[in-house]
Image (cartoon, rainbow, N blue to C red):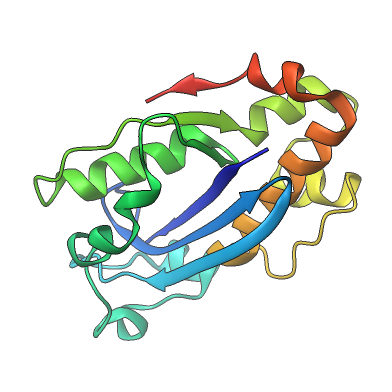
Length: 177
């Protein structure tokens, strides 16, 4: 499989407050490249979010905005590209809202949600959180809620499930944004 695993962290409860982004590029079921950046959301941070991901306003004060990050990654979001995320509804909404703040149109791409497919393929797990699924599939998650670690784990989950259940089972769970 060829795809991008994507994970955002946000500064607060607003989806347009992206404060970090990681992309993990997978070709032929192997991780071939990684991209990570902190992002200046140009809005306040909530203490709860900082507690989760340890990113503060001070950490991003000199970081690029999403509008400045976009030109560096937009070539990855071509029609027909498959993007996976664990709880993809959250991450695709953060993408849409963070770009929308700068009047940048959301790209169209295919999405697969490892949270949803884990519910189908791993129904006996006590929950389907990223750390639980990673542990069950023996996928490394070296720092939960670090966007790069989460993206690598997400990629590992999709690779493991693809190897176990096959292309056709995975293809049936893809949708387009």
